[in-house]
Length: 137
Image (cartoon, rainbow, N blue to C red):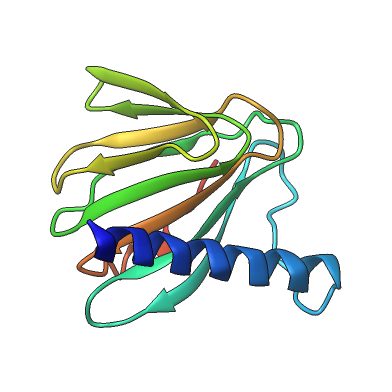
């Protein structure tokens, strides 16, 4: 359990660093200007996992399309706003700030922000090389 807490602290530290760089405009996040988008920012890819951030648009109308990670467990951590997670059209869960969800390999799922400018941290174990290329709508 300590290892999990250490990993979450590492993720929070990365988030804080990125938020600082964004506020200082040292880095920017590219966004699709069409309404209803999630922007994906890959932060790390290694042999053991990949992780990054998913930002919803300011109007909160984004919906990440249903998709499947065939060989990876995906962990979602809500770090801003509120997000609806729908898994396999059977399990629906609202993620509030600080909530984490685990999505097993092969389970179809999608997300929709319930508040404008919501933000998720995603972690895929092992890494899913196709995830950053997926396009939100």
